[in-house]
Image (cartoon, each protein chain N blue to C red):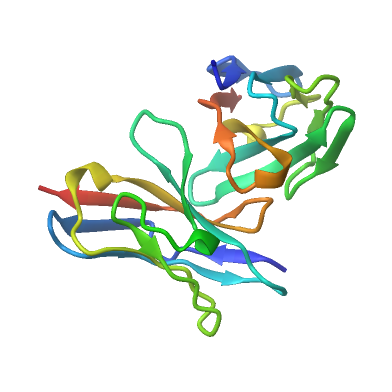
Length: 113
Length: 105
């Protein structure tokens, strides 16, 4: 099992550009989530999904869109990147009844200039 | 509102010394609390949860509802314990800001 995979590992964007961070898991987990990690702020939940076709907002959803068309994939879209979105982004997944035990991906380091 | 406070950004202890990483929370309701750890060049992973009351890698954490705390403790620190530790609240994992533990040989 590859577990949770994220692409790309690193990305530099200019302000206003759009892009999609990819996340996939092969553990048949129902629950998937996106976090951003900033110095001194810890990890903050952006969006999450409890199953295909169902998504919901977390603590810091503004500027990000998600969709969940399959169990395996949970892409995160930045429609118009801003410097405030410079961060490390983590995707995670878990079984629905064990949401506390999330498996994290390796992270994507995004810089917006 | 839910809040997790980890007051120490950095904590250094000598090998063999006791270590305590502090976590305080604010939550209206019955809290679920967890500790996650990220070792160097590894992914963030669950270390332990309060409900299991188990010891993982020598670490324990007791939920104190009166003091709204969930401090992580280990009686004798090892070099391999050096890592970033996050306290997290509820099944949606509301994380604290983390404490970087360094164990000095």
